[in-house]
Length: 480
Ligand code: NAP
Image 1 (cartoon, rainbow, N blue to C red):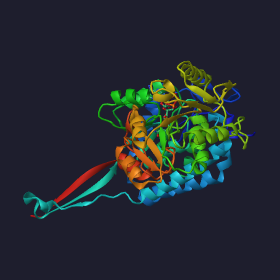
Image 2: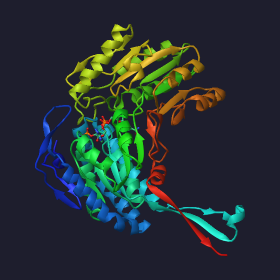
Image 3: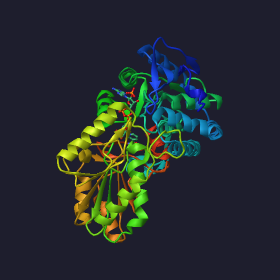
Image 4: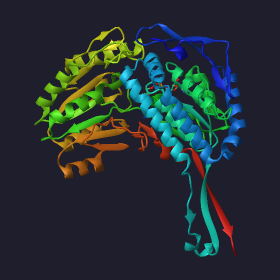
């Protein structure tokens, strides 16, 4: 397949220029393990250059009228639409995301940038009734929202285009500048977007893309005092490390989870099975709200398990570039090894591997585990692989306790026909979002999205990210 943007020696994008570095690393396809591009390894001097460029562009961006910021984002969305097949191939190639899923990610990315363009036009403050206080009589007070400044954006491999859009889109909408560090396995999507934003007329220095090791590039971004905010999506361990080093910077962390769904008695199983299979195995389970734990009421457990396994066995494994593929390679051979070890641990502890449990090359077969104990890694840690557990419960109340028995709390779902049970679940599930009659994997890009506990702090979703990426300033006029 001809993917021109993905087969060349790449460059850093700093201050509107494409910059070479001394050292390069080979980027390999997770599926074929063939080299697909050479990626610059940035030094801390390169990051310094990028931060300088972002600092210089700060005034230009802060003064740019809202309609111009919106225009740039709309133009980007249009250009991405025109080149959407190419964009999907890049994602499929660098992340081994099955092509149809990659195409869906591109479609969402277009929507995310469109939402960002709209948000750019509605950033506003409010008037404050200062005369509600005795000392505030005859004063006019209002707030405005100002850009926060330079944003350091650090992104993961699993949605290399849309999760970058969730940072770059609102940052531009709010009039900020950005230094972006994409995941080392998926830099091509970010460099492609930089190319389109350059064509769309983004001022130089407003977006800088610096590739290279997380520790080198990330550390410099997190510790440089000119960077006002770090927006990070990735694993809890890296996120917590960033938070500990960031001092007084604003930090938003979108981290992992072991998301769960509850299936109540009397639910029409046929209606929900294929949705649950999608939630468990989409992008090989490498989704932060991937369906990892299913708690099914004993009245429906057996029929749900039977149909779920039947549907799982129909998934097509193979080349991510083939439009028929449902499941392809995990992101790295190490993740394949780790996944198989976790499955072995479950087997040894007496859990049933109902289907899957093996790997072919870097593809792990979609795996269904029954009766897994709560202490197993596949239960209590984030699997980030095509594994789902199905356990039997006697009641929804019992299931709620099990869902909450987790260090994470991103989203949870419940299928039920009983309005009281649903309301009870919304009140008692300790997560950032509760989906009634859907899987926890539901996300559209304008909704507030984020977690509690080790799933992170702060919210994305364009309106909410713009709030995080702006500072509130109060203005008071004394008319006495
Ligand atoms: P990761 O290993 O934590 O990496 C994320 C990013 O952090 C990468 O760009 C990585 O760079 C960088 N990084 C690594 N070490 C760093 C350091 N010391 N300082 C600063 N940056 C550093 O995560 P991943 O494996 O790419 O992604 C999977 C994780 O992301 C899962 O836990 C998943 O749940 C989470 N996730 C969460 C959400 C959400 O919205 N809540 C969405 C998607 C994914 P390198 O690639 O160069 O190491």
